[in-house]
Length: 225
Ligand SMILES: N[C@@H](CCC(=O)N[C@@H](CS)C(=O)NCC(=O)O)C(=O)O
Image (cartoon, rainbow, N blue to C red; front, top):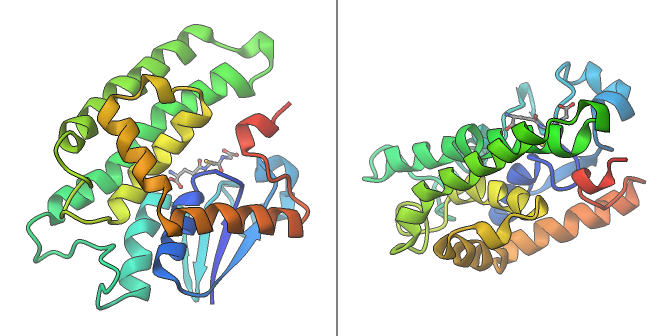
């Protein structure tokens, strides 16, 4: 049984959404945010203290974008759901590029905005860093905007793990209050993806499991003091 360690609307939402799109069984273990401080025993499982952690037999993974690639290959070897773009397909390179872009280019600047704009106590806040990296994130949306202006999805003309990786950064951007500043094609893409059954199930499952496991169902940034 695959086990996913998750905090509400954290990056672990990427593998959660992937699992729901695949429709395979898994166990979801909810943690308060940040687990490093609020669930110290978790450090024995993941010394980084971060989510996600995915356990699949002897396999242990801590990178959410890699899970968007791993889970379809592991759980849907025939690629019936189409979430993978395989090496023989023309868009394999584009798929890998967008898969990594979601975390390395789009989510990275948002973590600076969160930390220095919200999480740190007032004396340690850095408004200039938060503002600059907010602009950085918004400017980096130009790459997906160029594709989405005339494509429904990022690659291979279908919904793939790359869309999940990038869309999580849009979800976090919306939590940060930046939705109105997304380019129009990016706003439309994000609206379309939120109508997917798999996305809606992932939201419902994390809420139900948070309540059942005694964790706040409110997304992490707003749950912080
Ligand atoms: N590159 C990793 C980053 C994982 C990560 O930093 N997760 C955040 C939540 S979105 C976390 O657990 N932060 C808590 C902490 O840093 O203590 C990934 O994509 O999974």
